[in-house]
Image (cartoon, rainbow, N blue to C red; front, side, top):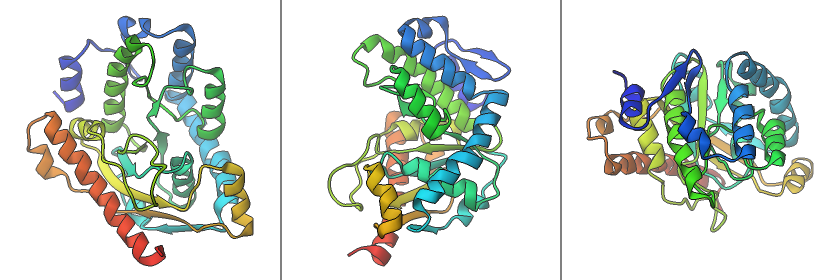
Length: 291
C-alpha cells in the first residue's frame, strides 16, 4: 500500500475514478451552492483534457503577458535545478510569500526558460476564489484555474472545514503520482507583509505532512522584488522599478525525515527544514542585491 492509500484509509472513505479521488457525498454536503459550483468548475478544469487545455493557455498566453510585464527587471538563478528534475515524478516548489503574484511569476519563468513538461497546481485558501463567482473569474484569468485544491480553513462556517479532509487527500495525491506535475506551495501559509524581503514567517506543518506522505521532489525558491500593487509593478518594468530576483535551489534530500514516525513533530521538522533551504537562497540574494 502506498503512502496516499495508507493516509486515505486512515481518514474518510475515498471514492475514486479514472482521474483520481473525489470528495465523498458527506464532504460535498458541507458546502453551500456557490462553493460547490466553484469547486465543481475548478475540479473539472484540473482533470484530463481540460487540464491539458488550461496548461496550453498558461504556457502560450499567461506566461507571455507576465513576461511582457516583468522581462526588463527579471533575474533568474538556478533554473537548471528545475530543468534537470525528473519529469516523471511530481515536483513541489516551496517559496517565500510576499506578493500575490509570486507563483504566477515563477510559473511564467518555468514555461519560458525550461523545456520541462508541466501541469501546474497551486493549493489555495477557498475564501473569495471559491465562494465568490468573481473569484472564479480571477482564478481563470490569472491562473487558468490552477488554484486548486481549495482549503476552507478560514471559513466562518466551521462545517466547511470538513471538506479540507478531501483537499488534503487530493493534494497528497497530486504530489504523489502523475507525470509533469509542478505544485507551488508557500510554507509560511500567508503573505508576509511586514518587515524586509529577507524576513520569513515560521513554516506551518501542513507542507511537512504533504511531503512526508507523498515523497515528491522538493525544490526551494526565493522570490524578491515583487509588490502587491499591480499597476505600479507593471509600470516599473518600463520606468526602472526594483529588480525581480527568483532563485531556485537544488532538490532537497529529505531521507532522514522519512525514517522518523509519521506525526506532527516530524511534519514540523520537515517544514522548518524546507524554510531553512529557502532562507539559504535569501542569504545569497542579500549578499548580491541587499543593501
